[in-house]
Image 1 (tube, rainbow, N blue to C red):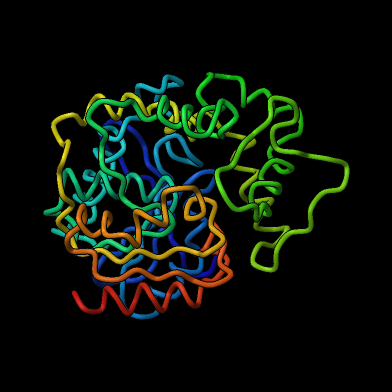
Image 2 (cartoon, rainbow, N blue to C red; image 1 turned 120 degrees about the horizontal axis):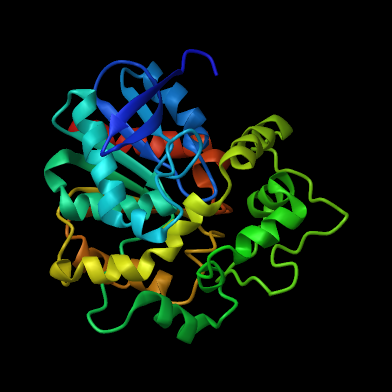
Length: 318
């Protein structure tokens, strides 16, 4: 894309691919699953034009960034935040604005927990902060609430979902994920978990065939295991973060979500977000924006609206 620079940075023992554009205060954009730096293509262009340095890496295990191991134990929150701390240091700045979506948002919350000194403000898209339960491991809790077919539970068995994806190929699976608009907790049946048929769904207006082919080309080369390992390290993250039980996140935060987002429509999330629990755990939560008709991939689906909300918030801290 025009004017976007690509480089490889050595961070925390791995080679990280970074896309960036512009000069000025740094905005660090963190992607989710199954995405890449490319999910932020509209934001890189927009914020570079406003005088920011917009930076979007492929996270550990994704795209053109190294996948150091096939073991989930190499994909913990400590590893990934360690990568990002080294990236910030390589940029030559003291602090960054943080914008993150999906798994990137989860990593963003860990970043704010571990190194709030590096974050000016955080715009969180889709996934609110969830405090660590002191006695219940998260995967077991999810299985108890949503059953064995809940997607995070289905992702736990190493190699199983990769085999399911291989039957149909990256492009068909990604097409299905990006076009899915079902509300509530996603469940994947054991047979044909992504529900792929001979009639392929039409892409939404916000995602072109060229966009889809870009994503698929990177997953064809790298595979999905790196991204899936983030899910497989969830219980290990719980073990490693015992010292942070009960912590409050003390950075300024804006939360943004589509009202059709599968996370937002999962039982218990709306009550937490709007019922006072979120504000209690994140005292500097300044704004909650629910975008009517918005789905999970909000920053790609509604880029102009999302860009406006991001800029309106971070401009207060520039």
